[in-house]
Image 1 (tube, rainbow, N blue to C red):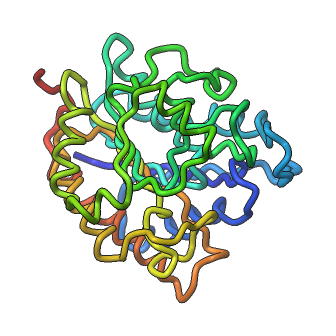
Image 2: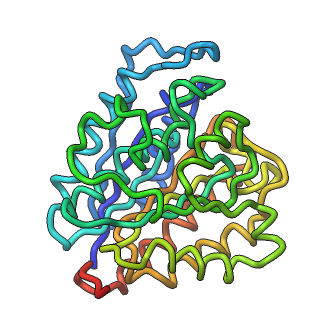
Length: 303
């Protein structure tokens, strides 16, 4: 199977600048050896970005416009099963487009999603403290309020019962109520360290893979501890080491026959040190490309 890479160069979903440059740098690195198609999207340079933390609808219109273009491109380019989409962000708001683009392939069915991040990203416009739309991403993908962020999508959302968040260690108080009412399953960084990633992933893939047509993976680089990967927009300490984070990716890709799309998000070159995060991100993408190359030619799965 062949891959197609979408560079989603937007940092409009966070108040920190720089993540819009991540896809540019990583696709430039990939161009030295990758022979597949790369489609890069860049945020409109004429947009005056709001960084006001008291603005609860920061850059809402421009995020939705960027995601509409990204969504339509992914849907059009992957309308059959010959190409496997890898989307490189950009902040996590771009994942609303890529995850729902995968869901659109099965309008009468469901897909699952595993969301690797230090944040739960389950805020709404009413509960967000920062107004960063990146922090509303999972709720939008699950159809929990935030409908303004998915006007471009008119088929099934990804159900909360088929969504798992892994690695969360920074959940806001109001956000906890959203999660509690949704019933979504969360494994914290502490769970990973205490139980081991193999056990957690086995449970996660059982949840998201049962009676679904495939699984979307979203891996945010803030899962790593800033000492290992400093090049992210909103880092949180007590994260994973480079070895632990790479191990997760290796274990995830053992399930490649069930995976239908993959995101790697939040590489911010302006915050990187000695290109440490860039090298981790590049290694992870290469792992995905190699795994997909060995993947079968159909996404059709048996219940």
